[in-house]
Image 1 (cartoon, rainbow, N blue to C red):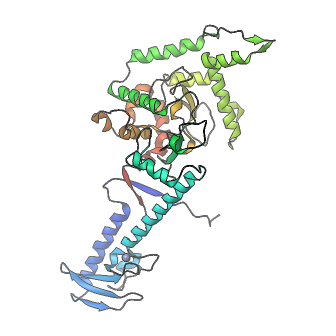
Image 2: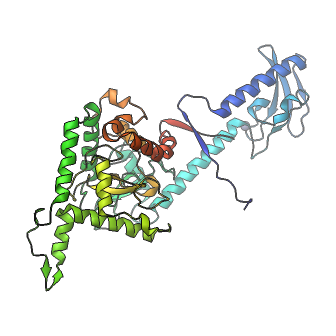
Image 3: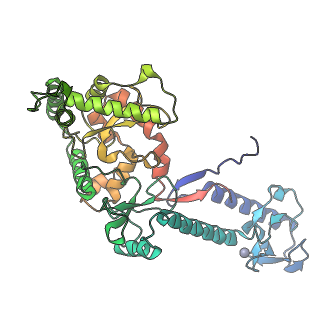
Length: 429
Ligand SMILES: [Zn+2]
């Protein structure tokens, strides 16, 4: 077990902020320059090194020790290499550094690292296109050109050509009845890439409506009366019988429930719709590798209670949910923690539009980010300035206990979301 290499974690920093590595480097540099100033003669000379030539020069009245880099062949100060930790204890000008082709000066290391990342990008695109023989790298490049950069063709957010878990490039086929043809396909983020049933015929329209709603809510949150009326509408509808819900056809044919009647139930009769949703969720849990606990599974009544708790608004975006099964904002059962099943504690209702794959789950932070950088809807500056804190959605929709849950659920995403407007820096070189 111990031989398994721990995955290297990336630390994210806001743009412009110095990284831990940079700060450590600055400290080292300052310390070693001071040490040289005290211990070395102010005399320029060449000195023998172990594998590479060294020389001492005087800059700004300070003696600086340089060594020739094995990759770029330039003389660089020792603090521009990976300096071993004992640098303060070793005799001046004899400090140990890494300097070979694999570990050259920091500048060279940075460049080779960038090359590696570019190679990975290439590999990612190759893998992405692998299953679609008609989609070539030329097609991919044309997409980037068409979108004025590596942006989503639907909402316009910047994309990442890597398995980042955040806004990674995926392919949208606008003619699902056909194979992936260049003229019908577009690049979009994995977040936007949802199984498109007849419910969402046009993702662009759906996202436009979503963002419009979100902006409206941020500009002027729903009044208590609107929220109450909206809840009452759901409660009233939930009480209706199939006939009252507008189903006119006969329920039975030859003693059996007719298929057509069943279909009608699942379109119009809210209780039946919830039953169907709860069953589907249970089936997915059963199909997963997760362990099933029969006592915890949710039923139609639970779906209703969850909706009631959320005031029938989307848990993630805060927009009002729709009873129309064929709309983008009909509720979809979302698990807060993907390692757990659909239980009462772990399930919330979200717009079906936001029910993306587990690898690219939406969060309130991601929605804020999307709202800021999407190109579908005009967003007033004061709303764009509103940062990560997703209080404005929550205050209006959830009580404080729900707040906690929301925080817990989106905590994992917070860090990831900062990626786009931040630099990514590995903690160690
Ligand atoms: Zn170099």
